[in-house]
Amino acid sequence: MLNVNELQKKYKEKAVLENVSFQMKPGEIVGLVGENGAGKSTLLQLLATVMKPTQGDIQLGDLSYVSNVKEIRREIGYVPQEIAIWEEFTVEENMLFFEKLSWKKRTKEECRQLCLDMQLTHWKEGVQSLSGGMKRKLNLAISLLHNPVLLLLDEPTVGIDLKSKMEIGSYLRNLAKNEGKMIMYISHDMDEITTVCDRVYSIGKDPFYMDLLTKNEISVEQLK
Ligand SMILES: Nc1ncnc2c1ncn2[C@@H]1O[C@H](COP(=O)(O)OP(=O)(O)O)[C@@H](O)[C@H]1O
Ligand SMILES: [Mg+2]
Image (cartoon, rainbow, N blue to C red):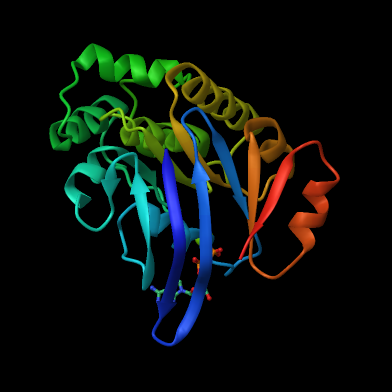
């Protein structure tokens, strides 16, 4: 269970997030939508412990974001907006490199299986020759090496081909439904949001996304 309570984030004097409170349960995929600059990435960075909130608190299960940061980090997988992998290495070399940095040990076969589970089959191929979709999958696979309970994805499918997009979507659904992961997921693709997510939070002042999603058969709530 993730508990977010009265979160506020200011950059200098500018408040980007105010009074943000919500909860997530195991097995849920929650979409995060809103116009550019609304504060979506900021919220994900707070949840990922990359930044500290100006006010408010977050709890993951029994763990507090203030006093248990080290333990919390072990439970979080975070994929930032920018892809962060070694272009000059192969898929295999990337996976084995990041496995070494991870606190949880994985065999080579497990690393390979993780890639195969999301239809990333180019194990021996150099990253620079992979499609954008394959690179995204690799980034996602790396974030899952330590088997986190909370997965935070900042626009994981932007600019990639439809096939990879659908494969990532169905992989995430399985992960949530079969393994009870909590997934928070930023996207601008409303078709994808409505097929992949269980419910949606809209952030920012623009009512566009609220209005659009309310017309669909998906639960959508405004985060302040
Ligand atoms: N490190 C930072 N320092 C100052 N302002 C920032 C910083 N990061 C983001 N901002 C500002 O905060 C607002 C929200 O940004 P962001 O969370 O990236 O929005 P989104 O992901 O919804 O596009 C924007 O106005 C942005 O310019
Ligand atoms: Mg962003």
